Every structure is written in structure tokens, then in C-alpha cells.
Image (cartoon, rainbow, N blue to C red; front, side, top):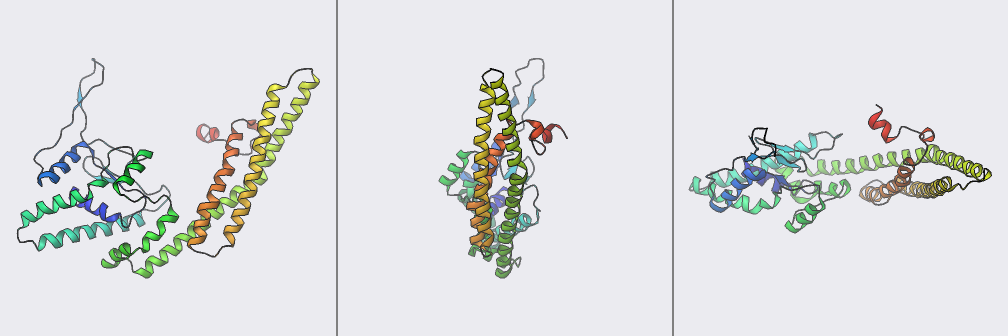
Length: 328
């Protein structure tokens, strides 16, 4: 099973997006190393005693298979788990791709084994070849770390950082070939899906950007102005009382800086969103949203998030993160 698994993931690198790796744990990795070196696996690691450091507790065995929740493909004792579909996404697309490349991998292995003069020898050679060629996808470390991105680059694994850059892989020649080989999609059907994905991405980002513009212009900026006025009144009142309004003045200066940053970021987002909407549908429009609109949205959010940490809760125009986390 591990043979076909590694083979189909490696084959799927032609089709799948982002950095694909597999966590197999110490136990299964030991088996893989044996298969690479000899073509046979004669032993398997067992779990060790877990040291709790508490003498009053009995010793118990640590599972040799373990788990890794940062890996897109993780071996969890008796199965592999695929963890790359977004929380709001359907599993249909991922399953279509996975099942197709599984079929391709089994097809390649079967063609060679069925035509072999010596089946047992051919199996051993196939195991060593596939595992040796594709062992680079095995990674048991932290798949979310920057170190893994650098290590993956050293291993020659592809890294496509966003959906927009990933979409063209659907119509790459290897992808078209494998989908047409098994009658899953034709080139025309793949091209239509590319067009739909670009359009969906553009519309989604456009809606989100215009929602941010509406919220910032009608809710946040007016609230920040009201807070600044309240602080200004407080500064004047303290001065009239003959005291130094140091705290009120500091908060006022900080608020005015963030208000200006919010207003400037809002104007930039309005501009680039209008520019993006005027472009013709397609890859260039999607890339414009990705390169210009999404960063502009991040730049607008930054000062607003900072204001939430200092602003009077009664003046904040919507439920805060604290309300959402602890008040529901």
C-alpha cells in the first residue's frame, strides 16, 4: 500500500497544488528504508515506553505510528488522511484528482508487473524504484514551518502559494493527459473549469473588498472620528482643570494616526477595486485581484485591528473579537 501511496502522490505533483508531502511516522519510515535498501521489510519498529516523570503512574506504551496534524497526507496507524480541503470547500474536486492519479499509479505498476517474466523479481525492483524516486515527499516535521518551505525547495518539490497561480495546472499537458487517459475530463472541460475558477475568484474577492469599503467608510471611520472627538474633549477638560492630559493626549495622537492610516488605506482599496472590476474576465483580472486588491484589503484591516485594541468598547460599531470568542 505504501508503495502505491507514494507513487500516486509523486505522480499527483503534476496535478495537485501547493507543497505536497506525506507524514508516515518512524515506524513506517523504517519499513520504507528497508524496502529501498533491500526490497524487503523484515521488521517493524514498536512503540516505546512513555516516560511521564510521575512515579505513581504506571508506564504505558507510546504509539509508534503517532500523528502529525501539519501534514497534508498523514499516516495515522491504519490509514492515510488527506487534510488540504478548505473548511468551506466541497471534497468533490479533491477526490476526483486523487482518484484519477491513484488510477494512473496503479495502471503504471500493473502494466509493468503483468508483463514481467519474473513477477517476484519485478515486484522487488518496482518497490525499490518507486520508493527511491519518490522518497523526497516524505516529511515528518512541521509542515507549517518556514523551514519546510526551504527544505521542499531543496528537494525539488513544487510550491504554488495561491489559488490564482495554481489554476493553470489544470490545463498543463501532464494534467490533461492523465484526465483524458481515464476519461475523467477532456481538455475542453478542463479549460471551462479554469475559466469558472478565475471568474469565481474575482467575484469573491470583489464582494469581500467592496464589503470592506462599505464597513470602513460607513462604520469604522465615523466611529474613529467620534472616539477622537471624545478624547479631544477629555484633553480640553483636563487642561481646564489645571492638570497635564498626558494619557488622553497620547491616546488622541495614536487615534489620529490610525484614523489617517485607515482613511489612506480605504482610498487605495477603492481605487484598485474599481480598476480590477474594469478589467476583462480571465487570468489577468484574477492576478490583479491577487497582487493588488488582496494586499490593499490587508493594509486596510491592519489599522482597524489596532484601533479595536484601544478604542472604547461602547463606541466600537460591531461585536469585537472578544465578544465573538467569549460572548456567544
